[in-house]
Structures are given as structure tokens and as C-alpha cells.
Amino acid sequence: MDLGLSFFILLLFIAVVFLVEGAYLLWSDRKGPEVQRLARRLRGLSAGQHGTDLGSLLKKRNLSEAPWLDRLLLAFPRASAIDRMLAQAGAGMTVSRFLLVTALAGAATFLVLIVLRAPFFFALAMGAIAALVPLLWVLRMRAKRLHKFDEQLPEALDLLSRALRAGHAFPSAMSMVATEAADPIASEFQITFEEINYGVSVSDAMLNLATRVPSVDLRYFVISVLLQRETGGNLSELLDNLAKLIRERFKLLGKIRVLSAEGKLSAYILIALPFATAAMIFLVNPGFMKVLWTDPAGLNLIFGAILMMIVGSFWMWRIVKIRV
Image 1 (cartoon, rainbow, N blue to C red):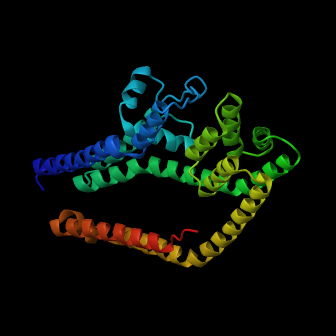
Image 2: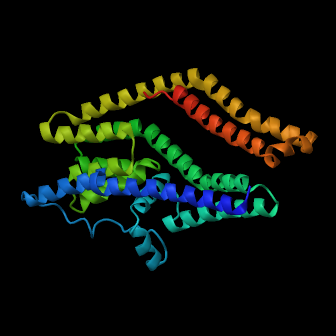
Image 3: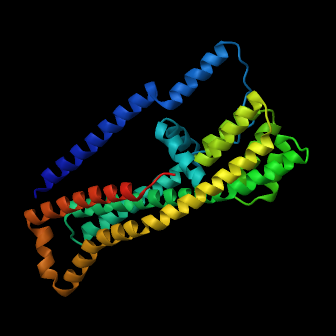
């Protein structure tokens, strides 16, 4: 394929990506959830509500070590989402460092394959896959941290319930969980206790906790506390029932994981089988496999196979993923 045509296709692909991103940012700036939340807050302030000035209470989290780069990243709406993802994963890196690692991984893979005289589109595809590796690593860390948080939540609710029965106030009970529990639930409850201790209302602090930790079980806990503060009732008994419900949910989720393990194993084997077969054939007879990336029809077959594998993997993932 002509090099000029290859670059034209690459630039066309980048233009389409930027067009889709621009359309999403336009929608997010006008109709997105953050805009709606800000509009509700402004309406509340205009109606006479007086919120707490949290600017001096919250810790400032920089997006970069360099001030000029921090200001540049603040201009992009996606930077805050990446920063929240890194915070939820417990990764000790800034957004700028994460983006640098992502760009270096993709560029290094692309350049190495070009030096090894690999096809341009193959090198481009491998570079894009390598650029996704840091993102997948962060998403896996985030999922593990959230799963550990969910596992710790029933014990934390039991501790809260016992502390309330002993006569402690709710903020004091939160402090006890932050002191006696392990991370990650201890650090998140400590932040919530500090917010309440510094003057933030319990409702706002609990909503901030639900925003920092996107856990369904935690949202049940937050809703329970908010409803109890509005309507009254026995909070300790409510927390006991909620802890029991979460434990039963984990038991059911474990049974579903056992039943869906066979489907997941089949998916892994089907995904790995074409690559393993191609590697074995390449080791035995490299000339036989060389036709795939030297003949235009072979390249079309590769792209078609990869596309069908992506669609099939997504389909199998949706089949075995059962929400409880």
C-alpha cells in the first residue's frame, strides 16, 4: 500500500476520533451530569440555601507536578475523570505521568515494529494495543480495590452498628471504623470523618463518599443514612440488616461466578487459540505465515478476523457477566 495513502487513512481515522470526542464534549458541556449537578446547586444557592465553603477544607489534588501542565490539563474535561479513576485505583501517579506512560508505551511499540520492518497498519495496531496496557492496568487496580472495599463493608457496618448501640455519635462511629479497619475502607471513612469534623454536613459528606467510591453496596449505605436522618428510626438495626443483605448478596455472587466459570474459560481459550496457532505455524514454517501480511487479501483477512474476535469477545463477556 502507498505510504501517502496510509498516512491519509491514519489522519482520517484521527479526524473521526476527534469529531466523536468533540461531539461528546459538546453534549457533556451542555447536558452532562456534572452540568446538571452544578445547575441544581446554583438553583439551590439562588433559592437562599447556604452551603459550606469546601475550598479550604478539601485537599488539592494536582493533575501534574508542573504548574503550567496542570493548568493545561484543567482545560480538558476528561482530565478530571482520569484523575478520579487513578484515585479510585489507589495509583500514586498524576494524570500527566499516566498520559506520558501511555504515549511512551504506544510510541515505543510502534517504532520498534517499524524498525523491524513490520507492516505499517500492523505496527499501528500493536502500538494502539500497547497504549491501552496502562489503562487496563489502572482499571484492574481500580476493580480490585473496589472489590476489596465491598468485602470490608459488612464488617464496617457491623462496627458502626455496635458503636451506635454503645452510645457513640455517627461521626465518632465513622472515626472508629477509620481507625480499626484496614485500607481501602479506612482511608475513605477517614476522609468522610474529617469532612464532617471540619463542618461539612453529614449529608454532603456521605454523598462525597458515594462519589469517590462507585460501589452499589456503599450507595445503599449512604441512602440508608440519609433517609434515617430525614425520617428517623433505628440506624443501628438498619445497618445490621444492610450488612446481612450484603453478605447474602456476596454468597449469591459467588455461586454465579462458579456457574459462569466454564463460560469464561471457553472465552479465554477461544480468544487465545488463533494467536497460539499462528505462533506455532510461524515457528514451524515462517514463509507460510508471511503471506498474511505481504498479500493485501491476507491483511483484509487479519483485520476481519480481529474485528470478529472483538465482537465475539464482547458478546461472550456480556453473556457471562450477570449483575446481582
